[in-house]
Image (cartoon, rainbow, N blue to C red; front, side, top):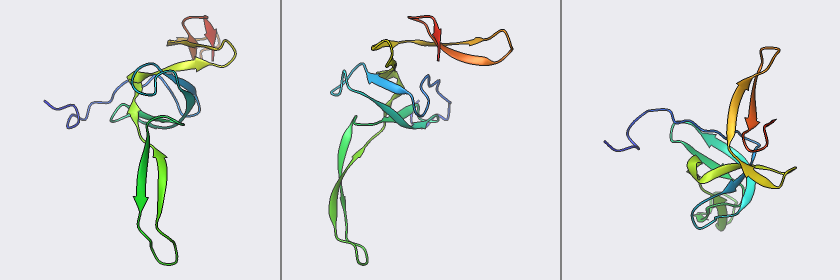
Length: 112
């Protein structure tokens, strides 16, 4: 069965606004902000990663142009990046004493 046709939600550990580092592929080592998350396909858009060239036709008064836009990558190729520690870390979830849920960095044992 093709993964594209299955409608199974995939676990995405990153959220919009997080800093991420790419751990595999042509953009390996690139750090950027997560701009958008696609939970159904398990993909994310990271700023400055997987840049594609798009040719736009002229419409109305606008001129035709060539625009560079970021394309989605699989979330498994990205890892959370801590700006304070300057290092990547896996993420976990825990319930705090007051009953609220929080994400934490497994490497440094700090909440986000």
